[in-house]
Length: 416
Ligand code: NIG
Ligand code: FE
Image (tube, rainbow, N blue to C red; front, side):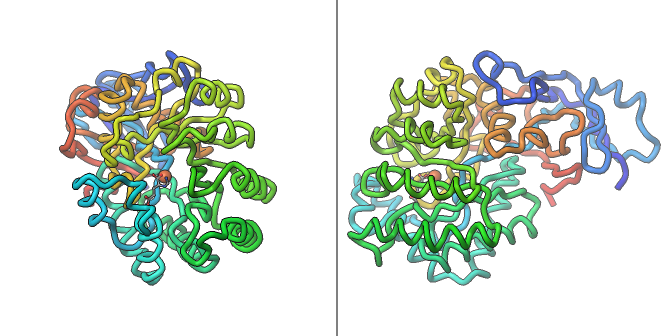
């Protein structure tokens, strides 16, 4: 592979900085190089500098990409997503437009359980094809690394089926997928009224097999009234931790059940959602250095107005992450630029804080901060070029695709 030079980026958004998640005012510092360039060798970044410096030392055999005054950012890292599922829930979307709530629809047998039925009915090949199509959507929005949760199988065979699809996505698409086991996403129909027996199944049957086959890096749970309570969460995540998995928690989404404090107590890597988390929960996260993963797409798409307290979290020193929560129920968007817009308009994060949250901080929340999330010497050459002159336009314009091209390890993967 020839060396690759990127030249003439109006804003080369490098996010150069300390080798750890960024907190407080650090989230405002994108370390932008104006009229910037990069030299890439063997898929890794060798030099990041003003464009003319790169041009002056241009190797003879370099392939040149002219950004022509557009902006260049690190590939987005989407740290919370549910991309593998059968079918969709467009009928529930229409019911919510008619006034039904997410909770009512779930209580009537819809919601996650509806997707579980559709996922079980799909073959592994069908699921892979559907998810590959979605992976293209993510790439087209500038995402080059993403988390992928199971959670729509809810039996040993069906959860393993989803996790194998995630493994195949890694092998067949340009995106790097980071797998998370979410067997504790809902109580499946066949365990109705027997939550303890289902937790037994997760702990004694699913978890050991997931770990034995090395199909997940982390274990997640939907800690919520009517799903998994604090006792079940302690039990399932305790077993996952003992088995060597990292922990992530869907916490305080619909009600404040002390999920954030529980995530802190259990030493989770991330606590996600946090729409209902109060100052006590924020303080607990801070003390345990848990990264909050905020998912404004799910508040927006459910037609709600209770966004998480991003400002209080940043001001308390938490290394905030933003993600799509892409899923068929509460957040059917693969677009990080849309999330940047919501972060700015609904949570009063500045565009710079939002970009930091969806790149370097997200990379650390997936334990990949040393390899991706910023454009620095030695890191992977994963980056996107957008048709803007100023990085703030990414969050400002919304509802239109601004992606010009996406690169993974120095190779153009979009458009193909
Ligand atoms: O993160 N809260 C639980 N899980 C998803 C919703 C899943 C679904 O509705 O299918 C979420 O919002
Ligand atoms: Fe989720």
